[in-house]
Amino acid sequence: MQPRDLSAHTPYQAGRGIEEVARELGMAPENLVKLSSNENAWGPSPEAVVALRETAAQVHSYPKTAHADLVDALAETWDVAAEQVWLANGGDGALDYLARAMLDPGDEVLVSDPGFAYYAMSARYHHGRVNEYPIRKADDFEQTAAGVMNHYDGERIVYVTSPHNPAGTEMPRSEVDALADATDEETLVLVDEAYGEFSETPSAVQLVRERDDVAVLRTFSKAYGLAGCRLGYAITPSEWADAYARVNTPFAASELACRAGLAALGDQDHVQNTVEGVRASREYLYEHLDCPTWESQGNFVLCEVGDGTQVFEAAKREGVIVRDTSSFGLPECIRITCGTPEMTERAVEVVNDAL
Ligand SMILES: *Cc1c(COP(=O)(O)O)cnc(C)c1O
Image 1 (cartoon, protein in one colour):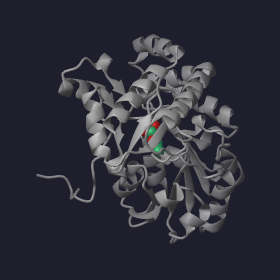
Image 2 (image 1 turned 90 degrees about the vertical axis):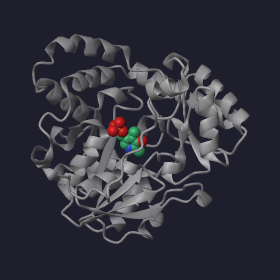
Image 3 (image 1 turned 45 degrees about the vertical axis):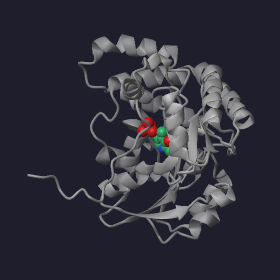
Image 4 (image 1 turned 180 degrees about the horizontal axis):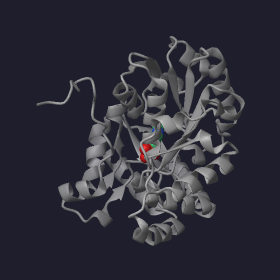
């Protein structure tokens, strides 16, 4: 027998894992510089590591209290009600919950091109149809409400990525507000702030507090350094009442993830150090790479290198893994994640040589 027809679904192309590449190159993983998946180069908070160790002996229990404690902590952080915080297995899991809650079969969504692949994948899993709006390199990937509205046709969800992956540009909060005003009453504007901590632009969560048609996605995978734990959440309109309880997979985030998340949330020094390190790395990349770059509000920089795949391969042979952005529809670019000074300098050296 076979599963249903999955030909319309495409596998997610993640940046390659460090062990995978090390094996292929015959190198030790610790000699590789991995700057391909926008992970936290400074690692997780040491307090999260302690929490994970301490939680290990309790993983025979379902995560009830930890889940509730983390939701409460996030609700307090964002000044929203606990019901508005939709905890999930990564930000990607929260995207699934939003699609489950929003889409009837055949409903349409609007995603950016280039953009984050999982929006469309998630919508399709939920029997939605996907339309695109362009974010143009010719306009330096500028994001405006008008730019989206030119392609809007009553879709149920409009996905906005701010800061944008892989371009690094933002949609200012006033533009998100204008976009939510311009779209239909039954359209949700979903602002993905996976990289929000690296930006100085105020979060769109303020709009979730003021309106009933904006939601925000956040994750512990980037600035909080917990990508391996899989922990993220959406902040949704207060009017949605018990929708989360109706759509979530029971115990959406694991005991380990919740305890690590609580500890990481309490260690803002680690986040601050990460953000400062990222800013320094971004500046170094702009200044020292021998190719055009775009100013980024995320923990990565998009670089125009000519033949992205070729530069990616050349860098890989030297043990530096960057992201080939062909799968984003930008074959002439690569994306380099911000790292420690040593990692960043090594990446610049290798990429400049490849150029
Ligand atoms: C990394 C990322 C996410 C969330 O990733 P998770 O690891 O599932 O939390 C969401 N959106 C964008 C644009 C990202 O780059």
